[in-house]
Amino acid sequence: MSALEAAVPVQPTYARQDVTLVEGAGCWVFGPAGERYLDLLAGIAVVGLGHRHPAPHAAAAVQLDRLWHVSNLYWTEPMLELAGRLSDRFGGAQTFFCNSGTEAVEAALKWARRASGKPGIVALENSFHGRTMGALAATGQPAKRAPFAPLVPGVTFARANDIDSLHRAAGPDAGCILLEPVQGEGGVHPLSPEFLAEARALADELGAYLVLDEVQTGVGRTGTFFAWEHLGTEQLGVKPDAVTLAKGLANGLPIGALLVADGLPGFEPGDHGSTFGGNPVVCAAARAVCDAIDEELLANVEERSAQLTAGLEQLGAVLEVRGRGLLLGAELDRPAAPVVDAARERGVLVGTAGERTLRLTPPLVLSAEEAAIGLETIEEVLS
Ligand code: PLP
Image (cartoon, rainbow, N blue to C red; front, side, top):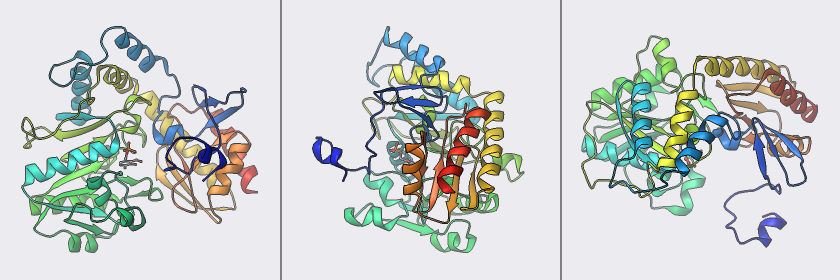
């Protein structure tokens, strides 16, 4: 625990860095004395449009002047409009709104249980789905789960990209196969299209639902609005039954969403709920985010991804670069945490995903010049 954490009345759940940030603009954040940092982490894959982007900022400001909250006992315009945008992006879906990624996963687990009538959940080793008891039960990282056992029963784990192990993990009780298209927290490991196609086929065979956890990969992060859209272009035709979103959806305001494909059984009144879910201010911001994710922005994601990947691959200390779009992990020949500290001291914020993986999840609006600054600093730190 740092000296600052020992002195403040905040639970020490995070290995927080002793830095206070007071302002942000685009891909930059600022400390109280005007210190500036290039933000290549974006609040862990959240601030996709950059800090204080004018579109969600204006939309939230207009809504703040109209109506803040009425509960889910009534309709609000921003919530309906956002649900419409998400349905269009998905190709027909009904959304349940909540406030975080873990809540979206929790909703997905409850929905799949309700709709399939079966209790089994198949997840992957090394996955991360959140911290509530259900989402944690499906998180394939024993160290995170152990202190809180017993968790929700019925979860079996397969190895990522190992089709045999997927078959072994999925029995007739399985009602839900829950996968991250790119494992984020677990070290930035993309699932292969073949593995996802097999998961789709297996879910159909077993009468289970394929749920993709796109909390980290969604909303443009991998170069398409949903990461699964890449699979369509690879002619495997994989489409999930349900998708979870959170992080980037409202560019930093708290939101989570479960999208369930049209035509599937859904929740009934009283099955699930959230007081704040679908909050009109947050939904107004998220609607503006959805409208801002256009071809030009997605092309920038691919271009900056190629630039960062090529730059990182040239560094001697980088053994491998993994990921998709602007969800990148550089496997180092050394522990990543000291690299994060040294980069921050030189004015660049990056993160880790596992002990030796440096994680880059910058704003999707990152410019070529900003990417070059980041690469130069990482090179200095690693040389
Ligand atoms: N699912 C995935 C894939 C995540 O990456 C995360 C957070 O990192 C979560 C769920 C949990 O989201 P939250 O921290 O908003 O509860």
